[in-house]
Image 1 (cartoon, helix red, strand yellow):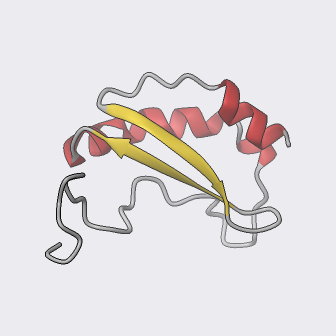
Image 2: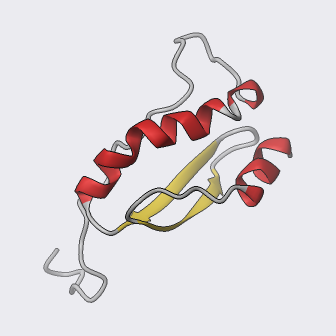
Length: 88
């Protein structure tokens, strides 16, 4: 609950960050979905995102690999909102 509340209270000032959602993907698993003005904004914000994460690292569980997150790795190619899903 502290992790969720920390995200709820956060007000990151990442240049080009348009907004995001914290999604629960399991009992203790979350995924942050962010919308960015462009890919370069995401790349430029990585150091600030790491600093932001450092503020709540004590709330995270190390599952043995030493890595607690995978910052800024796009899972999907960006597509314009008005794009036809059949063609993207």
